[in-house]
Amino acid sequence: MSEELVPRQVVWRRQYREGRYARHLSRTELNKRIRDVLLNLLHVTPDAMVGLRPVDEKSAVWMEKWTHVLEEMQLRYGPYPSGFDRDVLHSEAFPDFASDLAKQAAQRLSSLGLRDRDVFIKFGKREHMEPLYESGILRVQPASFFAGRDHNGAIKDDELILPLSFVLSRDEVLRFVANPQDVPHNAPEQRVDVHLHSPTDYWLYCGTSFVEPRLFVDFEADACVIVRDKDSFRQMLLLAASEALPGTTMREGPVTYVDPLLPHTTEIFVPLAKYFGYSYQEEYRFCWLPLQPIKKLVNVDVEIGGLQRIAELIVL
Image 1 (cartoon, rainbow, N blue to C red):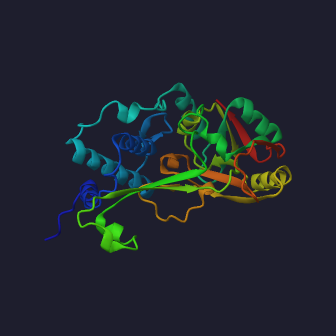
Image 2: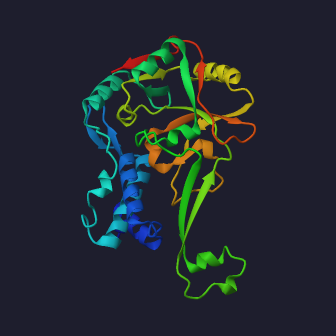
Image 3: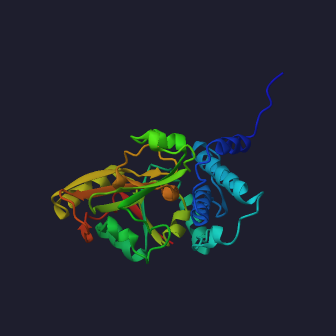
């Protein structure tokens, strides 16, 4: 007789109860985690509908996290919808994925036949995207710029600090202390918050290779430049930046998104890492670090040359 198949969500709930890693979060922190997980499950379909991401290996990770936050809420407040008040999703403005902007973006991008990772896309306002396309004029911002209060939720982030948070039982505490005999037998769990810091401000230029209409909405963009020849763009950018940003070291690559409760490692290069809530952006980043630490930098304008040969401008 074959074993009865157990639904994945049941397995995930059981696994979470065995290692309740979010139990130390405050209600506000748990609300934020719920919102971040949900935002990473949503996308705008080619026919301009709001839905969940297609089921694949990547979306399954987010479905598991979603099941875990539902289980944490149930353990605290009882069966759904207990505990789900307005603050869970509306403590910050929620992107309007059903807007006219989203519909225009879905229709336009779907007509281009682009594939993820085949292109490099820079989203922004038309007033900035036209000069980028026509003359290659772009602005390299310092990491400290993105912590500004006037940015929306998709942009605002402290790019110099990456927070991690854990809760340790007495047995786990014993593995980290030099004097385990001094730890009381009834010692309570300990919350540990760790902040990984970049030793310096740095410059960065970022875009994405993810062909996703919702990014127009997230970035409040009405235009984008789609670079089809990524190698040529990279060479043009690095050549111009070597003159505009002398005395720096350059690093580039896809951003690593770090779940603060479940990091795979603490050996993280902060300039190429971000809080997991931004995972849906699938950012690719170019970073320039000064040779000596500098607390606060200013933006630098760079002109790499027109992109007409290697890119196209999309205006909604």
